[in-house]
Image (cartoon, rainbow, N blue to C red; front, side, top):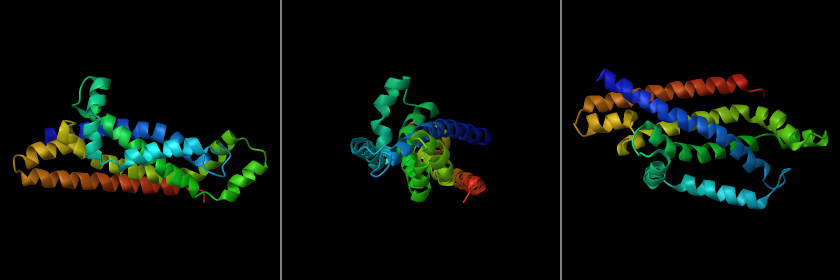
Length: 213
């Protein structure tokens, strides 16, 4: 079973890598956009705020297993298949983006408004404030949020295995549950616990390192 475990971990790493990279690339700008279009901010726009916020809340309110099934036709259209780790990464990405975007927005809300006001009074442009004030100040919270997103995505990836996504969840279902191999189920749980602990430890360490406060 060592080869099967290694293949399952590789598939899980592949689908999660795609989802997390895209969640960071899209979720950070989206979270910043939600923050700077809020009431009282320099790009205040109630329409954008309400529209994007509603879409994000709708996606986040759908349980992942339902979202996974609903997105199967879209995945088929996009990739030509609904099985395998790459196909599973589609639903993982769509679930991770709004999740992380809200965490980014929350991190930005924790910034002292006096820092933003001071930058504005010095004549800094909005883009300069985002680049030199908002993102550096919110970096520890964004890293902590990314850690939470990675751990949540790991849990989602196990569900993706139930519908042919592969990975550690597929291994647990096929070899552990269906064949009543309790040892495999236990080994899967232990592996996931170790992975989560490593992710959390690394994320906390990095967040403390970049914390300028």
